[in-house]
Length: 69
Image (cartoon, rainbow, N blue to C red):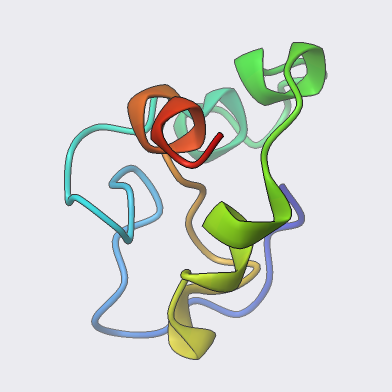
C-alpha cells in the first residue's frame, strides 16, 4: 500500500469494503517493509470496489481479497 494524505473518514487499519481489521503492516508501522498483501494476488474487481476516498489510504483485508476471486 502506498500511504497518502489520509482522508478524515478513512481508517487505514480498517478494510474499506467490510470495515474489518485489514492487518496492514504499513498502517500499523510506517517503517514496515513487508505486508501480507505482498504475497497474494488481489483481484482487480476487489480493488475497483474500494471507494475513491480510501484509495491509497486503506487496504482491503485478506477475506475481501479472497472473496473477489
